[in-house]
Length: 251
Image (cartoon, rainbow, N blue to C red; front, side):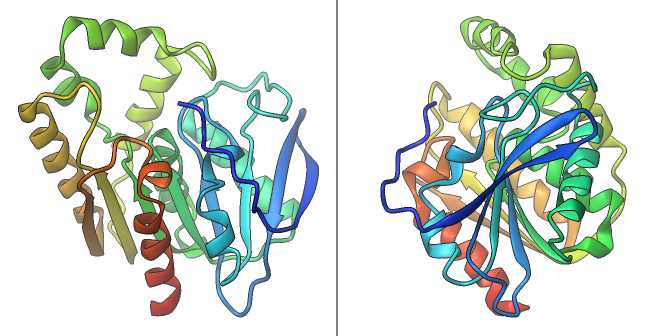
């Protein structure tokens, strides 16, 4: 899905940062204002433009970093496997090179939620809170995908051409299954309540699986975006903005 264009974005600092053999494109908005920086990780095949609807509001409160993962947007490709462990390592190095001090509020949409959860597992002291925006659960393939139509499954399998392949995506979910740390930071789980092509039963299962994500932390909350499809930041940007601001206000 193409991100909504936003012509009212505030000024930002654009950089290409060398991370290993890869040049990652970054955009840095706003100032810290004694708040944690907000780091946003887009969904599979998406890049920094996916976050444009919410950047103006959040950048008034703190520093916001959006970036293009390797091989997407303006970033160059990487020979590293396109699995979450490698992406998280690249993000960690990127933040160090940009001199953005932790802790961070991590915001991940869809597959980006897999990445930020793995980041929190490996670098817990760097994380002040997380917002998971309709993120992919680790048991998606085994538990949810079998409930969908054959047409949906075929379309799902064929999407893995933009960033890594099917096996690498599934390996990322396997990596997530190894995350056993109980987080002690606030986590807002945002779930889309009107998913495209979902039956009533599939939507109810999705809601239940999103509700279970609250249990990854001692301080979690589920927020249903009842009338939103998968891209909550497009369909209901105020829901995402409110969740991030609640974390900022509570720290």
